[in-house]
Image (cartoon, rainbow, N blue to C red):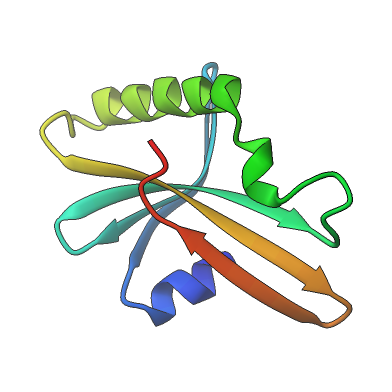
Length: 104
């Protein structure tokens, strides 16, 4: 759902589920001149908070460390980068996407 949404608004998907010892990046995409690292969080309800709430300070530190590693191993240190979160709210067969840009 998230990759289809991103492609529909003009993003180019570069990689999914990049895994390193530092952590995992759900989606790596390009939005014009920026390399965007996207964390996807899905919920069926908000009983335990909104999806963005799961991207707390420790999680952000792991994401940033993983992004730095990704940039290093792919020789992309001079890229403009951004960290986004996509919230997916599921309700039966229906869903709603909330794209939060530049969280850190």
